[in-house]
Amino acid sequence: MTISIHPIHPVFVGEVGGVDLRRPLSKAEVAAIEAGMDRYAVLVFHDQNITDEQQIAFTRNFGEIENSAGGTVTKDHEKRLSPLMNDVSNLGQDHRPMARDDRRRLFNLGNQLWHSDSSFRAIPAKYSILSARTIVDKGGNTEFADMRAAYDALDDATKKIVEPLICEHSLMYSRGLLGFTELSDEERRMFRPVRQALVRTHPNNRRKSLYLASHAGAIVGWPVPEARAFLRDLNEAATRPENVYVHKWRRYDLVMWDNRQTMHRVRRFDETKVRDMRRTTVAGDRPTAEQVAA
Ligand SMILES: [Fe+2]
Image 1 (cartoon, helix red, strand yellow):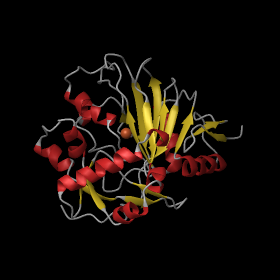
Image 2 (cartoon, rainbow, N blue to C red):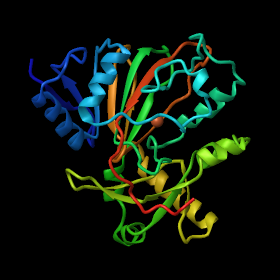
Image 3 (cartoon, rainbow, N blue to C red):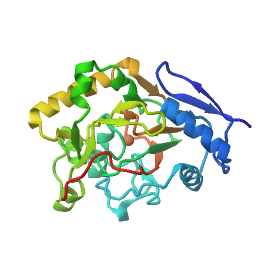
Image 4 (cartoon, protein in one colour):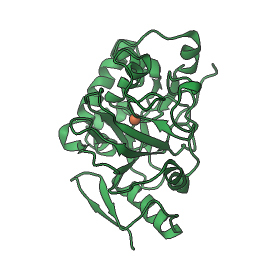
């Protein structure tokens, strides 16, 4: 089998054929997928009925797996999956949908806001790899926005403004937008803001992208209301329909995206139904900005 990748959206996103992710990949296959990621930023693989172990092995082709600690209010002893996996389902440890008022579910609703995974970490994520094990028949689409196209579409004056800016990202900002503000002291410490450059240059294709997320709640040196109004404008422009790909899940789809070049969000669905989605995350290799001592 030879890997094929063809575009399924005018701006980004490729669909991959000719690969079975249950088996180890050759160096050439890994290189073809990396090249596809550089070009398309989001890759869709259909009909990949894989186990967690196979997903972890596939993920390790692209770098180290990110430590999932610190990105959630779910305690270690409440976790359903291995610490190498991020549980993006709506399920508790009993594999049943969480109650409507479950604090963990309410926290996870933040995934319905546009974001880039782990932008709240000092070294943010490279790739995310999401496997659809059980899907719902209505809703629950995942939408992606191409942040390279978002940068390219800015006028020159705005490009000059954004170029040197550093934002502060925190889960407290994104959850605060939804009114989720009751946090323990330990959670506040865990979620303390980190700094991220607003403009990133991709290490391979050298394209610039806007590094935005609902986790971004401040711009260093700017008054907060002005920063939030400006970030809101940038987000609105970045997520115009022509820059957005809507993924309608099929069971056993695996979708892989580059967090350095895209944002995404999940759409609302009936959370009394089981939606079992499992993510692995490839760690990034460097911070995007200098951090200040805590
Ligand atoms: Fe996400």
